[in-house]
Image (tube, rainbow, N blue to C red; front, top):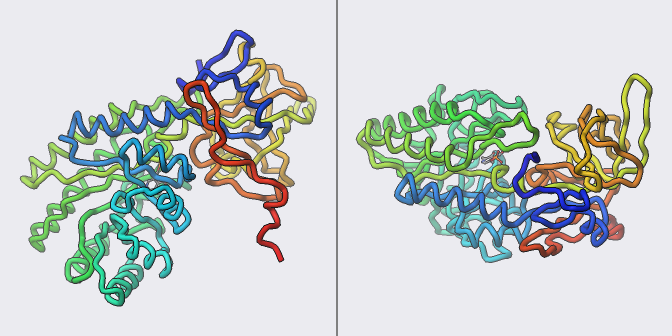
Length: 432
Ligand SMILES: Cc1ncc(COP(=O)(O)O)c(C=O)c1O
């Protein structure tokens, strides 16, 4: 019935997550609040790991894209499940290193890494720095020379694949700020340049074609392109790139119309296809990375809000305002992202009303969802927005000086705070 397996309804008609009553969570921790189910996160990590074991001789690793949700406890869980990590900033890197995440399993991304970020990455012997552009390569070379250190890198390639997803979250096509284009020869020139450098070692080719993708075809096309590129590099230079990273982007269920392919099925198709192409090209099968973010934490999370005012505009719209909004979930205002919404204290009654869930920020566009089907809803009810584990807390802000909501983790019928609610005084802590 629900978009995620970790959700249910108990005998009181309350929504549960990890079998925990969401209304008792609200009584304990208040609203708004993000809630995550640890079992679901771990199950998803295991699905990636087991797929590498089953279909690819364990010759690869999933790197959790921590931009989806970065905090200490998530880094601990990811490490304990033996996944690696993708970070895109000093902040994400710092968070990982604070819990002792092995540096060798961290890949550092970003289209405009600063001198300071590159230096920190080199100092900490980060597993791979993913080179996005020539300026960055020159900067890194300079840093390595001055520090008399070497570093292992990946080159980010734009494979030119147009995955069918929202325009704002497509990254593989030529008109993108990320990476080197193949068509123009830019990517090959970057490879040649890296190979010629003493302090920088080319280990991997990287690509990422977008997000919330349900179709396997764009990945198959991408594998064709990237394997052909590996072969072309080998033919022209004699250098064999031994690692390939296919990025993330595997779609999850936000609404009932979303039909994601299981992690196992997705991975099986990808891994067997890479193996087939390697045999066809008579090259060693590359060590393979994928970088899932959303598909690890997305369906594991929900957000709970309390309903304030309900405003009915006859024949136009019924606004249901909640005590959060674009400050804790900006995805609808950014991308018109779809979500399922449930009245958590009355989850078993039939959803028969069409309403618009509005936030409390001073923006007309501060909406969580427009025209969504929901149960009868009134002031004081608790609303759950589902599948908010990815790109919600990590994209949250203090707009209108609203403190950030806490994250509560559920495991084994127990709840614990993994990120505390921001206090009003935190909002001025950097102000002078
Ligand atoms: C380079 C890279 N890798 C991985 C991801 C994770 O994507 P997703 O959360 O859709 O799996 C992203 C998302 O933007 C990305 O840019």
